[in-house]
Image 1: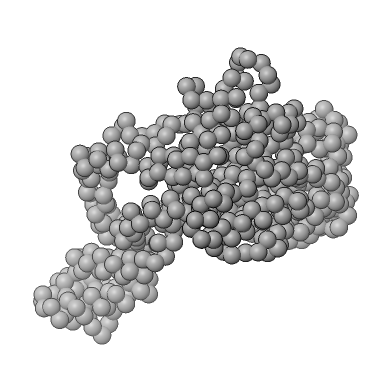
Image 2: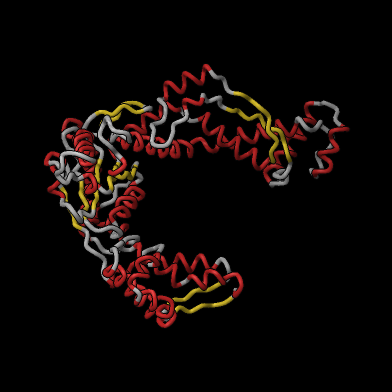
Length: 458
């Protein structure tokens, strides 16, 4: 975990997200506290629980983006889940413990990527030797030490003498050609392993994957099939590299480190938590909603969840919940669950000025994305300041008159404004297109004026 200070975390988030300073400060402090906890003595460290956060605000204002960017920034295992996809135990649907299993799965992926970097060099050397073995099986040694052309290597098949020294020289010539990429298009036969997975081991939609021990046991009963597949040297290098990396990585070490990482640094973002608030009726879907809250409570409080990689304690996982709370309020949640989210931050609705900043300031803003996309066709796109202001104004007005979807409205407006340029780009390139206020109004004015039409189009 990178030991960033809260100020540095906020500065990094500002590169991608406009406004919402209170939410940024809250998550920055929460993340820094996790680093601080790691510096404490073992006796005290166990007692320091994370301060979970509840973000309250309309859709499209940056709740999910803040959590996602935070995970990328710190390198922590992260999973985003929708509260609405879970049901109470006994109903058809996913149980809440699956979010912890997903978190551990992501942690395993992170640790494997780290371990992979440590074994890449050794794996490349092994792959090179394997490919040379396959190539040498096609040729016999010959007196070609002075000229490594492909034609002469192929001629070696009829001139070979079987001498060890000459085979070594031919191998070194092939090694040099392999390094230069001269053999990348040559086709060779590579042994490929295929797992025989029983049909009942395949998880269906919404179901949990099979237990790892069961899977390993059944793999022994159903041995792997080895077949030979013809592919180019370039394809073989990629396939064998992945295979060698897997063989060099110690699974037990990866799983142990992944569990440690998930327990101490994991972040679970629970979106749409307001949708599991009960309306008070004692029947219908509200029964399951209340049940989801009850099932979620021990996970957030701290419990032990059995995963395919081992048991995971959730005591120190950071939970960030988010919801719009249009028809309900956080106090409608179960009191016990409310108490597990002590930090509340309210995200404000986006103004026209916020939309202007979103279009211009972030590192990968929408304007920069469209400019980069059209530049691939030879079209240089330029936005005048008045045009940016007009786009922001239209986005704000549509959000006020129809459903407020926040910054997502900008993507809809931009696509409508640039539809003609995007369609004709390959025909008019190379050229330079200037987007003016008049250009924006010409393509949006009619849609904005027709409120019924704007509900469907924008």
